[in-house]
Image (cartoon, rainbow over all chains, first blue to last red; front, side, top):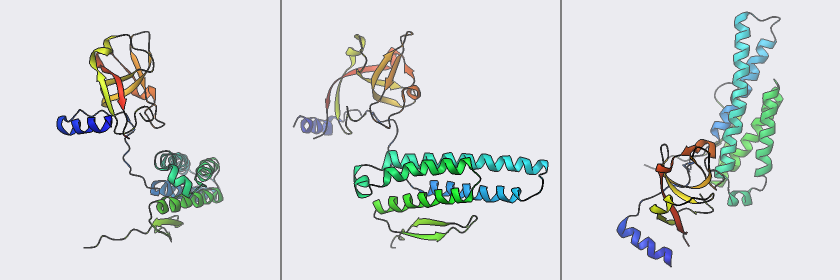
Length: 170
Length: 85
């Protein structure tokens, strides 16, 4: 009751607004960043494997090798960061109730991302993609958006879960 | 700042209370150079007399990111919180 009285007074007097929550809840979440970061890891593994096939590396190729490894590391961290934000900020009790596997899935993405970072392994990076795709599937399902799977139209040409968004009617 | 101040709460702030001895855990209205007017909890006063603030929400900015503020930036102390029903 007291709250309602203050709310009425607020309508008349416009009390100043204070923020208490500095990590701005912008509500803009999309698993595509994590998916693309995972594709980048796969692409880096492919390119590193191309270098691996050569009997010896020139100085330029050694520099390229370093760049590829750096990018693989960077995108491994990016996957973790993007997934953590969705998990920590977007996923709440209703989503967890609907998909109880979420905690375990997110933790397994952290482990799979570490594996993909630690090794030059296509299998490890594909395993990560499968998990991130599953997270994307769940994410869109919680928003009542259906999904479809398609091969991305660029290297490494892997299967990605996309939201089936409908065009706005004119 | 949830759970101490749920979203859309009204807070009753007394400016002059900031001049009294503030204790750890006091809710303060602060003018932060980066985040503007915010409500935060007093974490500690360091030996230089600077006030370190913290939030109570899991996604609140960590104490080291908020940084310390001087006494002149403290605008008041929260006396009552009226959470929405």
